[in-house]
Image 1 (cartoon, rainbow, N blue to C red):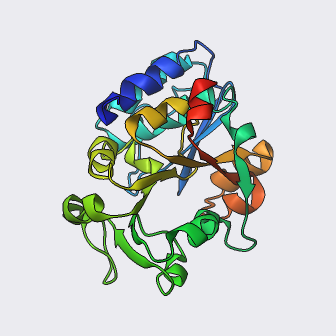
Image 2: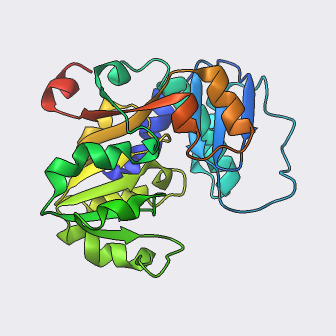
Image 3: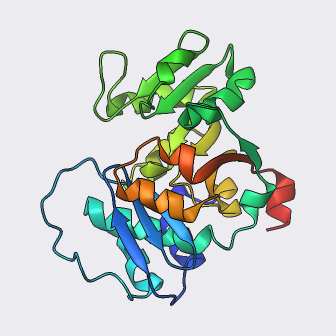
Length: 257
């Protein structure tokens, strides 16, 4: 098994391309890169007035800005992740192998709806409070761990205690740019582990780190997605330009990578 700490080497090795960046949009909720393909990453929830490198990113090679994934600056890491996804997800064959899923009106919850028959009666931990998630807390024994918890949630340190005892863990791929991915994956090795969200990189090698399922997105309408991101769209991107897809990272997928 590969250490989850190797995620950053894996991402950089898998996205090494000199393709020039055509556009970077840092929206309220999502950051978008347009290069070989379109890549997404959740934007930092950190207000700022001016980024020092704004106006300098277009026409720079992807393999230069992808290095930003190692940065401890939240905005740089976010741009780096979006660039990496633009390179990886445009060439990966995994989205085509994955099962399309949808939930009209609340597509951001489609992943939980998809797994509901499997997680009933199980101890489930979710990293991040997804909008509308409370509808499943009546049906499933679910603990939500959140960096900014509300009265329903537990704070970050609870992961050390909750994840090793969970049957299922749903881990937001935003954990990659914010650098919590390695530890959260280590803590979840006894659980079925689902890496989810528009930030997911479609890489079969993630199975070697203990990821059982990828629940990522395929871009279905790049122009509509771009407009929604630029206009401050949050969950609206699920209604306009992307579709959730789920793939079990089985031995068969790994043997064919």
